Length: 343
Image 1 (spheres, rainbow, N blue to C red):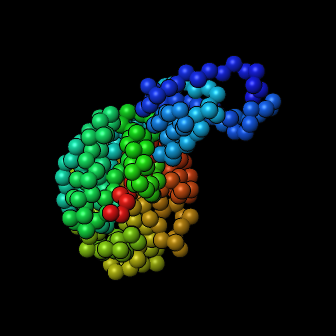
Image 2: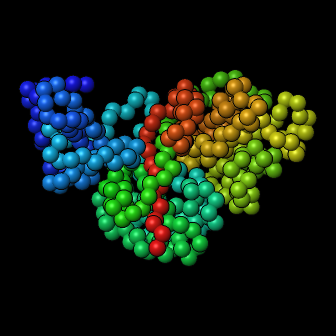
Image 3: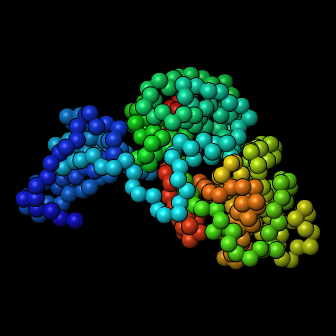
């Protein structure tokens, strides 16, 4: 979009606003008539005479030259929530999701929960915020975190939620970036009301139970990296449900030796139902099996008293985002991992 330099613009943001959500307009080119501007929305994580850093909702940091900033203002902490979406802060959903992938070993460290599970899945082998307080991140002893993971033969990973709301860790992300901790595996957390997911006729193709069967494991390709760890971790959690779809040409049943057409996992934790590991065999896709698996898991979770749903999906997984949007899941917040630099 183009603006003329005759438009009145003011910089109403400064170093004292670090940590607040802001909108910043900066020059894209030189300050000539018809020049272009760029608008950046996110949390202000650095302001100095040389540069301005704004961390967007997805955790990416935008660095601007301070002299190029022509307008800036503080904006409301978060956009309005879409009607019907479960009401919850970043901290609540982050803690619930962490309980959905319980590790084998934990330790509390400066308001964070360090978790280790022999290296299988980042979700169970990363540290997550254990409190709502995002203001005291400078207290986190990063050397202690690195030592704890090193003692277990693992890299130090921090799960860093972002999104511009209470519980976001944008300032920590900026601190870690300055210390050489690299960002990896960006993901999106989506939420939805649970009942609409189950609002369809029961699907006899889907079997839901509490046992982690050999067949279910064969349908979840990520388990191949460490089947023993997968068998220990996947059944763990507050209340775990497994869904399996047998192939229509297989008479062996869900406990047979064949490869399933689709699988899914759901962890019920109070009002929340966390969906994960929704996987359809490549030769059985585009048959509505992912929807069917989620519907039957939702039906079982509703029977246990859950009312809200969440899931975590990689940021660049476009087909999954399309499916979940159609099922009513809206973006709640983002997160990424920060990996400690090599010693």
